[in-house]
Structure formats: structure tokens, C-alpha cells
Image (cartoon, rainbow, N blue to C red):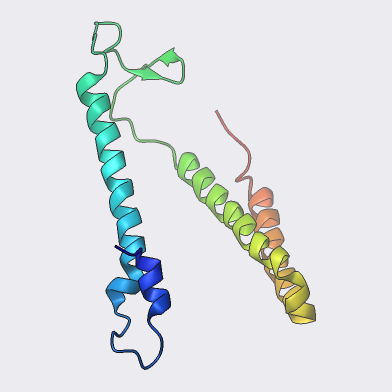
Length: 139
């Protein structure tokens, strides 16, 4: 039996067997299926074979190395959400910088100007957040 890639490589334009979506995406589906099987197998084995020794102390609520205090359903401050959103916004900046750096020479002056505008908007947003005190942690 020939590997799937060899069958795809042999199929030339005008050949009797057209290349189908199964031939094109088959390896991707096999890889995803194999990854799912391995992940489910590891999870199942850890659940079934893993040690189980619950004690009263282990079942207590635990948060950041200290015992929890107060009610369980206390609403979190908006400050937590604001910090998370600011983190996501400025983290996305780094995601856009990597592809730009890789393609810097091929983008030319247009790419440099566009990235400068992008970074300028982010710096303006950071300055605004700083001025409003969004980066100050209040207790």
C-alpha cells in the first residue's frame, strides 16, 4: 500500500483519478484524530489510574497559597477585568510585531509607516490608560 502523499504526487493534471478534498485534507484529519485519541487516552488513564486520597484538608478551598476568606459569591472588582483587557490589548501588539518583523524588507516603506501608525495608536492608548490611573492597583 502506498502512502497518501505518494498517491497525491502521482496524480497529474489530466490523469484519470482527480484529486479530491479527502486526498488534500486527509493528513490533517488524521493528525487531528490522532491528537484527540492521545489526549482522551491520557486524560482517561490519569482519571482511572491516578491516586485518589481526598482528606478534609485537601478538600478545603485554596487560593494563591492562603486560605480563602469571605463569601464565595463576592463580585470581583471591575479593576480585575480592566487589567485583563489591558493585558490582552497590549499582548496582541506583540502578536502583530512578529510577522511584521519577518516581512519587514518585503513590505518596504508602506509597511514601516503602517506599523508606526499602529504602534502610535497603542502608545496613545497606553498614555491614556496611564493618565486615567488604570495601571495603578488600589487595595
